[in-house]
Amino acid sequence: MLQTDSMWRCVCALVLTFPAYSTAVSGVLNSPTNVQLMSTNMDLVLKWDPPAGAPRDLVYTTELILRNSPMDSKPGCVNTSALQCELTHLVVSIYGRYTGRVKAQLGAQSSAWASSDDFLLDKQTSIGPPNVSLYSNGAKLEVSITDPVFVHSTLRDIYYYATYNITYWKKDRMKELKHINGLQQNRVVLHSLDPSTEYCVQVQIIASTAQKPSTPSIVHCARTPSEKEPLWVAVVVALFVLAGVLTLIVFVVRHWRSLSHFLCPKYAIPEHFKESLLAPPKSSLYLAMQTSQPVEEFSDQISVVMCSRTEEDGSKQPAEEKR
Image 1: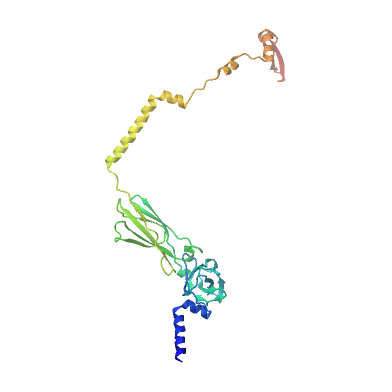
Image 2: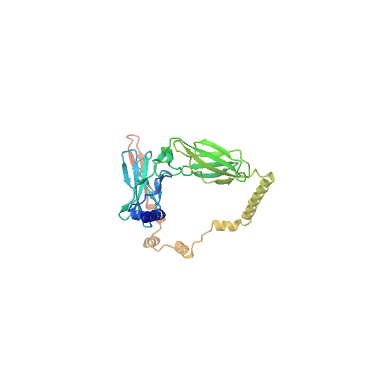
């Protein structure tokens, strides 16, 4: 009897000491732990931790359940060795209530399903940081804000009311923070800033039904311009400009002949073109005219016919005039 009790104690000690060994002996796999759905900008990812003492060749299968309808489950990743599964493509409504579940598999053995808590996508998703640009505009700084890109729809379509909280400060004075909260426009001008000073800006989005604000934007810094330059600086600049203009005028006047030849060159007609143009024509018609009698000799044979109107019938009568 004493020997039997001691044997059972040894077996129990081995089971407690080697959980992986107990899993193999019992033939039942432990379920994954710490199962949770996570979301950023309306994506959806299921994450989990492996069961205690899990072998290296353990794989997992996941499903996504839409709680708005009775047990509407959709398969996700199958036989994956990773510890997360992308489920964004299974989202059917941005206002749905979802639950993710996962089970471990080793050969023909499977563990029980391990489920996450219910997840409200539009309320629990993490809104990413806005994109911010900072410009120096005279003695002011202009802040330009762009909403983060969502996987499903847009921030303004999902949340009927969203505002920006702007925090700015002098770069060397982190404790002196200034805030502008509740802004709806995506452009704002910061006034009353010190000249020749570097300011830093950070922006955060507050959405109407989201459970938490967005991730703060990257810190952007810009320097305000210095005060107006003294009058003597403007005078010196004007003198330099005037001297340059006068130098240019003198140069043009002194080299006008060379510049005119360069800008408006004169083109000469080639000599062989001149000979062709000045040489007498050699056509047969021209030679015939040269050998014929001059026009003046036949001028007495030219008759001019003129029309005269009679007073009686107003008709025109031809009249011939000899020359």
